[in-house]
Image 1: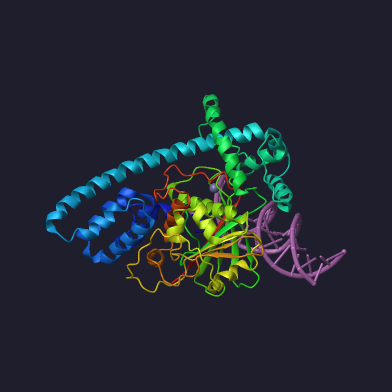
Image 2 (image 1 turned 90 degrees about the vertical axis):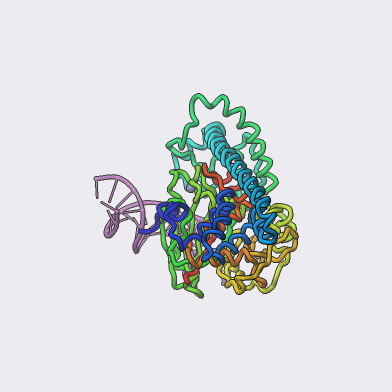
Amino acid sequence: MAERSTDSALFFSEENCPRRRVEEVDFFSKSRSVDDDGVEDNSGKDLHPEDDDHARIGSQVETGLRLLTGNTAEEEVAPENGGEISALQGDLNRVQRENRRLKTMVNQLTNNYSVLYNHLVLATSQQKTPDLNRQLQASKKDDMITTISKNNRNKSPDTNISGDDNGATTLSLPIKRPPLPIDHRSGPSSPSSSKFLKPIDEKLESTMDQGSIDLPCRKARVSVRARSEAPMINDGCQWRKYGQKMAKGNPCPRAYYRCTMASGCPVRKQVQRCSEDATVLITTYEGNHSHPLPQTATAMANTTTAAATMLLAGSTTSINSSSISTKDMPLLNPSFLSSSVDPYTSSMATFSASVPFPTITLDLTKPLPNPTQPQRLQQHPSSPFAMPISMYNKPGNAVHFAQQMRQPPSVVETVTAAIKSDPNFTVALASAITSYMNGGGSPTIPPGGTPGSPQFPQSCTTFSNSTN
DNA sequence: CGAATTTGACCCGCGC
DNA sequence: GCGCGGGTCAAATTCG
Ligand SMILES: [Zn+2]
């Protein structure tokens, strides 16, 4: 059907966007490319007075999400003294140039990372799982996964990726050994790649260990609620529907999709409308991509990964929102996470009740009361939550990070506005969040596409959109 | 005609 | 052991 999001993704992110969409586009671009934003903001005010609100929102967002927010600040100050304007503009230009340069660097790094990751994945699957792969081929791949997950499920295994079966399984699982090599990684590069692989491998191991990342045993879920008319969120990935079921207490059916961008990609997603609010569309992502992603898809993937990471990291011990947000997502924390747990978040709890997996929820459906509120996000660890986020650690426990927004933060407003105009906005939001979670703090999204992070075996991101 | 979707059957975990 | 419900498979059907 209309499940193909790729096309729309392009549409969304690229030049096709009509004037009206500028908001979203701006927002998006902000979350992914620094220089464009800066430029846009300036020109926006000067050239498009009618977009005033948009520009304002944009700048707010920038403040909240951006690393390089110098532009914004300067802009606001500028109006004061005419004499200083020129100087400020000079500075502004400089900053913009700098931003551009940095962006380029980031992109390069990202690309390199993607390439390396692919190498790693390939090498790992080949080296560690020759036997398993054979078995895999013999039996169903899915069976394999199930089996493993079952084994791991009972105990919280910190699987060490030693030469063990477990270790091997761990790494190979998400990859599932794609029949067709996704890229250039074979022959000549093997020697050199192996060099890199070792260190990376070690890193991976350590990362996994600390995160309690036993792969399949725990499926982390991240849910985000937003509003959208679209039947499905456009995340830049290609999905194939493989099932549909009627949910229990919900008249709306739940659809199951699987990523088809790569043959072995383990990522799945569920799409369902909220029974209470038909306008709410819930999309759940699970797993990490085992292949490079387009920019648009990267945003989503990163979000998933980041959220999963956060969840899993926190899930190891009793979850304390403050501990998680502070430790794991220093950047995210200030703007997106609140460290207080609120009883008022009951609405989100709805979800959690029957969730069998650790789940993190991002709720974008809340109304944004004061659009004009200049409130800016500060770097306080305990700053009010910009977006409602809740985490459901274990089946029984639901931890809420960010309650419903009591005081609508600027980011939320922006997000909501964007969503209203276009459901795709969710992606932008995701990218922004991801950026922060990844610790980059840099909203720029890797062009090369980020492979689902290998470190996190399973992650689910849920997006709910409500149509307005 | 190949690829994607539909849809009922099937599998599996869980609670009673 | 049985039924229920979530999730997946795969044959049939539809779509481009
Ligand atoms: Zn994928």
